[in-house]
Image 1 (tube, rainbow, N blue to C red):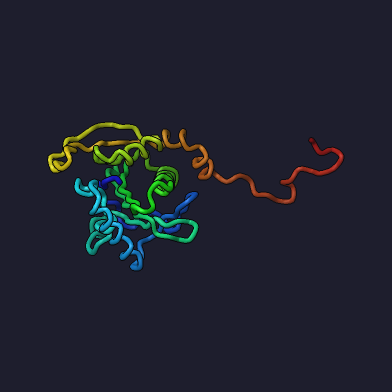
Image 2: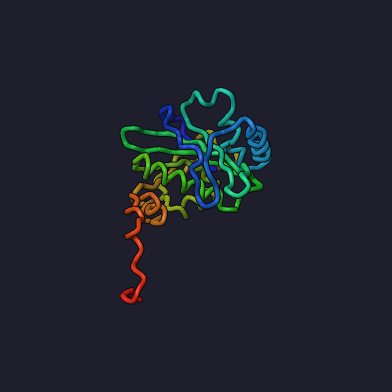
Length: 216
């Protein structure tokens, strides 16, 4: 789980509902999702990682949270439409075209590739559709799973910041990891091609001739 910074995304610029990847889609939060998100938080509260300030599913969507300006989305599976987590999108700095996010997957749905797919969907949308140039996330130093996940996606460690509030478990720092649009495009060429300009339409002259002159 990553921790979203306290910065706001401009109202009305949230991710388009229904944006989908290979395994999951991002959509708006529905009232029917609240009970499931609360259940995710209760399960996370029993985990040691939750004691050092991990991203909380329900806390991001509770009454009053939208006033912060962040955009919140449900993560659901393409097959079956099962809610497996949530994502909070934030815009750090409009001048530098930089954004950030927090993501959480329910304990029973982890290690299925949902987080990786959801992050890839978000990055491709923000980089290729919104023309942002950089993404930076803050990850607690003890969250080995999230650090490994983002490293595999192409994020690079940029800094480690001491956090005096993270005293439990001996974890006293936050790791800043970042990735640029060119770095993401180079690592995920298939995603880049999917967002490229469409080619010429297929008409009656598109298909090659099938006759004695057809090439093998």
